[in-house]
Image 1: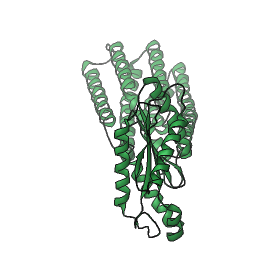
Image 2 (image 1 turned 30 degrees about the vertical axis):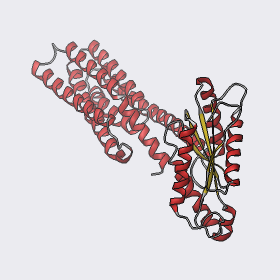
Image 3 (image 1 turned 180 degrees about the horizontal axis):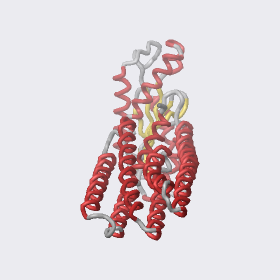
Length: 375
């Protein structure tokens, strides 16, 4: 099963189980109400037995729903949870169908009309609850309606006999409507997930799998104006792999791509908070946004990344810096004001990167803007 199909199947199950609390409580109230209305037509033992069975099944389904809601591995157990759902629906429907048939046998024409209205209501509610699972609706509606419909069709009274055909026709119509509703809801859900997937793809770098320049631009805009509104610092780290052209010339572009991917994932690991974002800025350059981060901490993060790249120990015999792959880092921190733009953050971080290269590379340099009160 593809990832998107698995996500859709998981979401369908979440919807099916999520609606169960309300529908089970509604069904229990209706069942008890019908038992009360027909209390004079059935024995106390019969009513008590049906109520006990129904409430037991309701309790088991509520327990299954509770377990589902607190399960941590739904997507890896889709078949298991769907099987339990279908089993619960079918047993529930058989219980309802048997009880409705028992009441229909003892009902007078007025009560029979009330009973059929209740059945139609149950079926209509189920069509909405199971709109994401046509199979679930069929497994509910068929055992619910068919026994009573067949009983009415075989009745001697012509008026009751005719109503039986209408009941069975209603079942067929509801199944067709449910099929149509299921197609519509499934298509809508699929479109939603496909759009999310396309958006995700459009913001990911094709080679390394981390965020791309487009996603970085969006995040920088949002975080800049958030920092400006809250008067909080925002830091930016730009990383450039030293002598990467020479690396490609020496080891080939395939090895160069592997080198980029390893370093990209390393940098991604330092985007640890919800607002942090690492991205491939272009070529062999990477960038890291650190909202609400003072310059000392941002510089420490950059130094940790520099040392981690050294620890990768990726050979680079053509480098004039070291015999292994290294990287230079530019860091800049500011509290945005209304006269500045997000581009200024990139501009000064880039200047710090240039200074790191000028100082021999494999260094971290913090740019200090003299116009700001920054150490």
